[in-house]
Amino acid sequence: MIEGEKTTVQNSIIRYAIQNGWEYIKPEDCLRMRQGETGIILREIFEKQMMKLNSDFMDGNIIQDLIKKIENIRPNLAGNREIWEYLKGLKTVFVPDQKRDRNVKMIDFEKVDRNIFNVTDEFTFKNERYTNKSDRADIIFSINGIPVFIVETKAAQVLNAIPIAMEQILRYHKEIPELMTVLQSFQITDIIKFFYGPTWNVSDSTLIEWKMDRGKDFELL
View 1 (tube, rainbow, N blue to C red):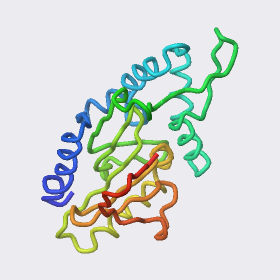
View 2 (cartoon, rainbow, N blue to C red; view 1 turned 30 degrees about the vertical axis):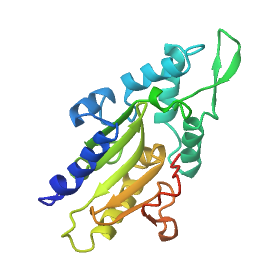
View 3 (cartoon, helix red, strand yellow; view 1 turned 90 degrees about the vertical axis):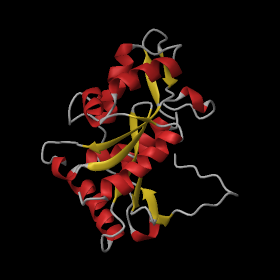
View 4 (cartoon, one colour; view 1 turned 180 degrees about the horizontal axis):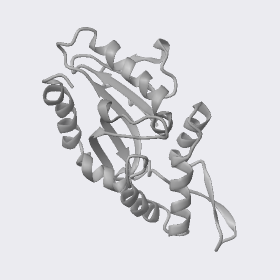
């Protein structure tokens, strides 16, 4: 990482996130919650929230099955859509005690304060072929223990900072698609310019420059 990138860009975004209600988790604590570099879900937060948001049917076995399904999702566009369906509450789980399927709520969109919002940095991930230890994800945002947004930052003085950050996102798709499949949106910034798009469609046509428009609300999920 170039000197100044972490202090002027990465840390600035994290400070702003904290000021707006996101709780910071140290990289080592995040790694522990994920049970190692091959894990994606922040388990203790996810387990707590699944019990809270689905208290009338959720149990430990269902939660472990959900973690397994999410972390082993197909690393492609279909898998990315399936994760979106989980996040929107459209997917069901079978509840043995009730002998029927129930929709599982992973995010409470009506009572936002019932959710837990976390931000962490220097996120490492490893699959059977690659590990991003030398090229860690700068910032990851999670809701209820599920990583949903990734931010790649570059220092403003770096020549072609935005294209370089975009190349990094594309490299993640190639090397660690399991993580990118779960994430729903990516952002790239040099603190002056800020672009975002859906994680599984990274063509130039879907890359959007963020502009403040007080007359509209933005929905990323």
